[in-house]
Image (tube, rainbow, N blue to C red; front, side, top):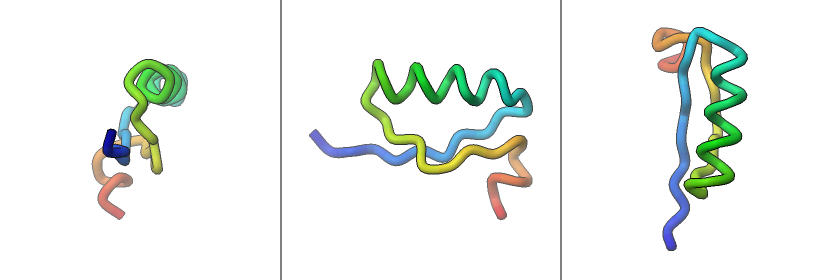
Length: 43
């Protein structure tokens, strides 16, 4: 199966961590970066 790489943005640090755990453990995605908002994600 092909590995997917994800950049994840959410303004809540708690939700970023929670989503990262769920996405990596249940869906096999690899979170390569996280950002606090969309603007930060594009830098």
